[in-house]
Length: 272
Figure 1: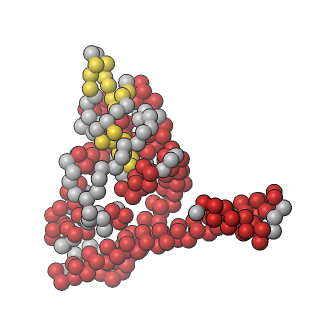
Figure 2: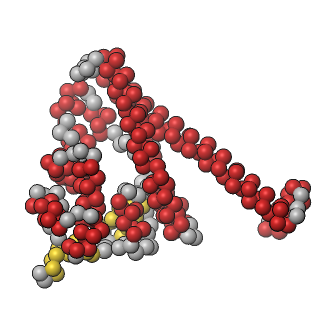
Figure 3: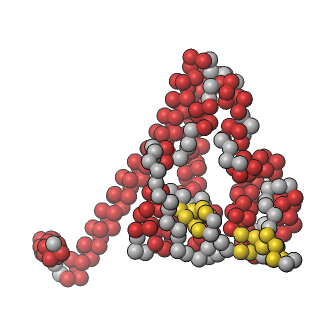
């Protein structure tokens, strides 16, 4: 695991040394290890500072952030972290609060082997971005990808760095749009519930299962339509790029489409 002195942590996180010490005093940030009189920080400190900065920018108070971080450290459910356990139980909404919101992992019940550690510099920019965007996590001294399916593909790739840079590029290009889509989807659900039941409505016992199903359907539909549209766009883009490449080959070698097809067919036969 990468190690940082206070000056390094300030430079990488953009948080002043004064605020770092204040976060430690308030319990938001773990105390650093010590090497003599020198404080030694690691990737967990850097990641926590980035989370704190992100949540402050979203308008959360330091007190709320302290509750969030404490809840995550103790592996609490969403209802407990938000202090809504009693309300969730009263309204019969435990299923919604406790259900995993990562739809990509919800249907994977079979235990899988631990993901292969990434062979990259843990103190480099690539690793920092993977951690910052939640694409990877620290497991002891190892850095591993969070998503099991993506981890398997990256582990099997000849050029893992290309795949990792692609993950970061896609994340940076889509994070604002994805958040807007999530907000839009949830706002539509909220407006529908308020329109049908009114503000402050608590579902009676006989309607709780139906309401939980609606909320689950909304998140499934939202994730499904985004995935479907992205697949369609990727297919279209791949066909366009391949077509442009083949046109370039025909022009460079002065081939007709029939001659190109025969040439590609001959290469395929040789490989077989």
